[in-house]
Length: 406
Image (cartoon, rainbow, N blue to C red; front, side, top):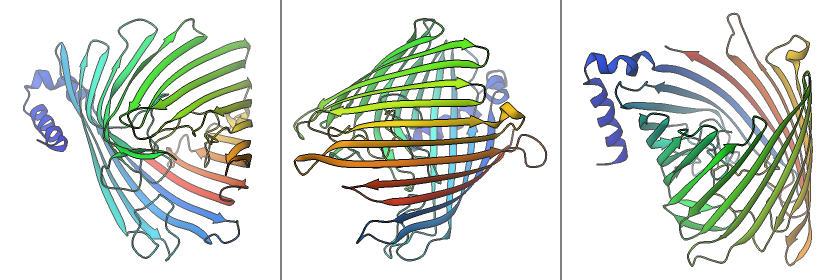
């Protein structure tokens, strides 16, 4: 029986349960429809490059989450149906990640995908089987395009011990943002193919302000990675705080695919004052390889931003960032962010002359009330310059609306 058939069987089984057992299953269920209108424009600026990647698309995401049946062990099921429609994409301007590519250099007119997840709950622990979308230091799904990327596998979470959160599981396939099909996994910039990523770890709150974590994962036959984290949030007075975020990862080969050696250190410090936040970060790669992570997923790096991750061989990078929440002056829902990251010392063709920088700016507004409540507008702008990669300017305009159904 396939995983999809198992999920359907779980859903039918839930419908056959007695009314008493169904009480929480139905009463705690929720559903919502999200509409995403996404315009993406990336202009390539280096000599000899293609002109641009430009597309406009409409997405529909129908989310349904059940509660759990009554009893010592509760059962439930979640479903996410997704549709993507092309509004505009000329020949040669595809490749934005919004839509699947076609043979003309453009994109397919439409695509769809279905994510079904069975779940069970015992005390303060949950187990999910099927389609997964989650975030952790060792692996996180990507949701920066028209439709989210998902994994297929098993995920367990537990909070049985006070202040300790445990997470672990196994992934065997990945479905990219612009794909309807699950595929094998590979490692970003490293390659290879694998059908197993096993991971586990936990985060422990030592004090109300201090949390430490340790996570471990293995992409079978490609790499294994250990990740340690430390986050300290120190209140300084009314509407003031300083946050320290430290991260260290050690990555090595697994199996005989190829030798892999990477050590990644990152530190970010953020000072918050009222609606203002001022941040600074440093990230350093060492070893003979770039930072490995599952292709298509999000890496847990302090300098992973809109386009680049600054995780190349021997790269060191610095970030400055500023955020402002306009709720501080009576305009809730309006936010602004800008940041700049500069990287150097990248190994390119045997030397360490590689340099790159990226600048980002986000402006977003989410209507808080009235007929447009839950309607959001976001403009994301970025520029990248590099002496070993692409030079590009990018704009993303995202309109979203979430309609609760029940």
